Length: 500
Ligand SMILES: Cc1cc2nc3c(=O)[nH]c(=O)nc-3n(C[C@H](O)[C@H](O)[C@H](O)COP(=O)(O)OP(=O)(O)OC[C@H]3O[C@@H](n4cnc5c(N)ncnc54)[C@H](O)[C@@H]3O)c2cc1C
Image 1 (tube, helix red, strand yellow):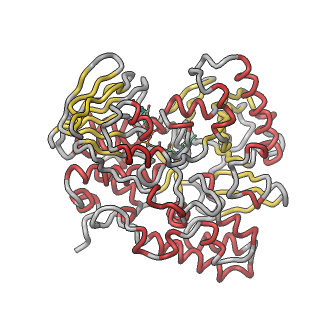
Image 2 (cartoon, helix red, strand yellow):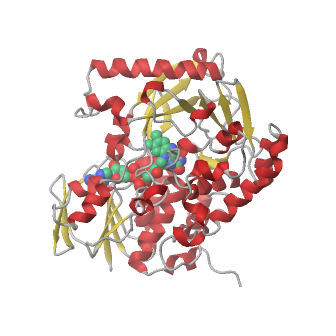
Image 3 (tube, helix red, strand yellow):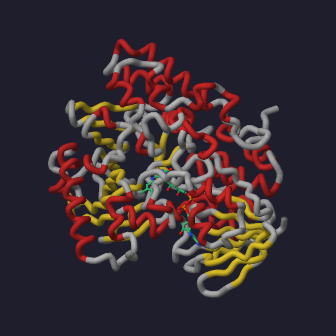
């Protein structure tokens, strides 16, 4: 395979493009938006630049797996990131008990920080953290270890496929502590009795190892990946979505863009949501059973976001994220429309030369797409006055919680801009504005495993629907996808050479 066309210039498409261009393939990335980046996109309002879908990143600690991939691409030293506080990386507020909890990172730090509130649970906390690290040690790609391809979830340990809430319950009977151990649930769309323990364990392990933030905008990272593609002779086309793919005998012959351009390559990578892919392919391109199976996979919930410009020198820069939950027992239940908002995440993105005060805050509130269903047929900028009014009412509800968490917050606000599940759907092309693509269900794990190879011989998949989402998951799937083209373990051995 000498040439590759990548559909979608988001996190997954750009990582695949950068890796394959570096490995000598002739790469073309086609992105429907004017700007590359997908979840790495930023936008400017009221003179402030806001990240849209990448507020906190993991895997960038000194021995971090994503850092090693960035080292291999030669971009680590050009990245501008800031680590969050080691002693307080996240704060959680349970409104029903008016109680704040501070988490620290590092295995000992995490245990110590929670043992301050639950001294009798220290041993249980230690056993829980050990179990989390033990479980994640079995995932080859996460540890950048050669494998026989794919994650064998069934071989490692029976706990892998326990519901995450049951896994936590094995280690403590204290209900408040159980909720705290699950506090990252909105970062993976966690659901009680459904989310597999391994998803919970991977996210928890990576956060315990330490989280970071992009400084001055996540779009700079998209530009670094694009730079690797271009320096190695690749091309990136923006503002021209892929509209159709000609597929014959399970082989892609060519694809066409909205502006009428036609492209051909040896192989193609779809870095877009699989539902969006089905819309641009002939009905019979895949076996009907495959389309039926993939179409039946549920998506994670979406979100409503507030992008807040703050008045100068009024609100402190917080080098950690704040999590608000109305009721501590709701940690697995962000999908209750009648209880909205169940909880929120508030963070202040860092600037270059960040000083004591924050210039902006981003508040993300999980929300179901059904909330905006009545405007589903509308386009960005043309959704009508009733939609604008609905957004204002929702923003008001969210600000009440933010005020409860940080008394005086409202007085610090200069301007507020809002985004709904429709915004996420229309900017990323993700079905129903799903935050993290497909939902993973331990009761039907086969449904949650979408291989990167397809029955269409020269078409490969990548992106958050295949394995894990986000900055910790999508680059690892990009390795799987690229190795499906270049040869199993060919990249892993370069990225993480075995020590002599
Ligand atoms: C509000 C929000 C907050 C988030 N916060 C975090 C966070 O803090 N940390 C974290 O790690 N993850 C976070 N995530 C998740 C993260 O953004 C995603 O997991 C990640 O961006 C998914 O990468 P992807 O490549 O699969 O898709 P995307 O990055 O969404 O890229 C898909 C790209 O394909 C393009 N496209 C779609 N259709 C076509 C077409 N027909 N032709 C050409 N191009 C097309 C889209 O325009 C888009 O650019 C967040 C997500 C959201 C929505």
